[in-house]
Amino acid sequence: ASPERPPPPPVGNVAAAVSFAIGSGSRAVLVMQGGVLVAEQYQGQGRVDRGELLASGTKSFSCALAAAAEADGFMRAGDLASIAISAWAPGGASPDPGQKQTIRLDNLLSMTGGLSNTGASALELNNVDSFRQAITARSGNPPDEVFTYGPNSFQAFAAAFELATGGSLTADLGVTGGQDSVSYLQTRVLNRIGIAPTQWLRDIRGHANWAGGAYFTARAWATYGQFILQKGAWQGEQVVPAALIERCSTYRNGAFLGYGLGFWLNRRVQDTFTPGVDSAPWPTEVAARFGAGSNIAPNVPESMFMAFGAGNVKMFILPSHEIVAVKIGGTQDDDRFLALMLGTAP
Image (cartoon, rainbow, N blue to C red; front, side, top):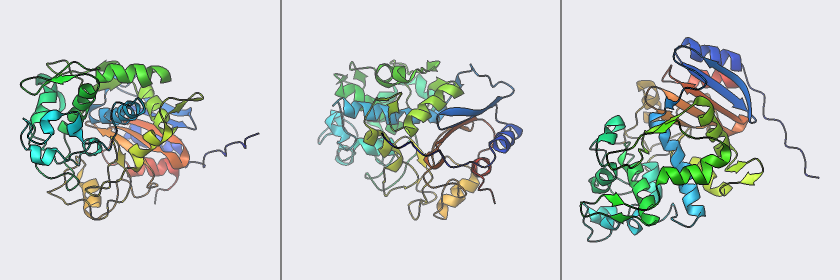
C-alpha cells in the first residue's frame, strides 16, 4: 500500500487574514487548504455567484492553454513563435522580423520577448483587432533582455495557437480560422474540472481577450488554482502532464525572475528588475522591493505564486501549505494578508 500523504503544515490564523482582507475593502475572500474550502466571506457587491472580471488575472489561464497545446502536439513552449506566426520569420511582413524571428513562445508567456506594449490595452483591447495589434507590434528589445508588461505578448501567443491549429494570416496580418483558443481550453481542461467562465470578452474580430477578458466566480477561479496546485491532476486523472503545469511556476528567464508563464512568482528578483526599463504594474512598496532585488511578499515562502488583475483581483497558490486563496478587491500589498494566514507576520 502506498504511504498516506502527510497533512499540510499548520497555518497561522486564517480567520484573522480573512478579517484583515474584508476590513481593508475586499468584497470576496476564499481560502482552500488541501482541496477543502476552509474560509469564504463576501461583502458589498461580492457574492458567491458573481462573475468577477479577472482583468490580468486572465493571464493565469494561459498556463493551462500552453500545457494542453503541448500535450496535444500543437506547439511547444520552447518553439520559435515564428513557426506559427510566419510574418515574424526572416523576411516576414511584420515590422522588425529580424528581432521577432528569435522570439520563443515561452518569451510571450513570460513577457520577455521584447514586444512593445503600445496600442490598446485592458478593455480597450476589445475595440480593435487584438491579434493584428500583437503581430504588428514593434520589437522594442531583443528577447530575454527586458520584462515588458502588456497585452500584446498574450494576444500573440493566442494568435500563434490559432495559427498552429489550422488558422491562417490575412493580408492585413490578422488571423482567421484555426481552433478558437477559449473553446479549446474549455473542452480540453475546464470542463474536466467542472468550471466555466461566466463571460470571456472578445475583440472586434471575435478573438478572445487573453490579457484581461475573463470573468469567473471566486470559487471557479480557486478551483482552477487547485488544478494548478495539483499539477494538472483532477480526481485521479492527469488532465495534462504534471511537468507542463509545474513549469508555469518554475520557469526562469534572466530578463526578470519575478514572473513565470502566466503567473507572478514570489522569487527574489535579484538584479533582474531595473526601474524605468522593466515594467511591472505593482504599487510603490512592491516595486521598491523589486528594485532592491527582493520579492512580492517577503514574509511568505518563495514558492508562492499568484495571478494579479486590475482592481486588486488576486489568486495566491502556496504549495508549501497546500493553500489556494482568492481575494477580490482590497489592499494592493498582500504581504500582511498572507503572513497572517501563514503565521509569519512580524
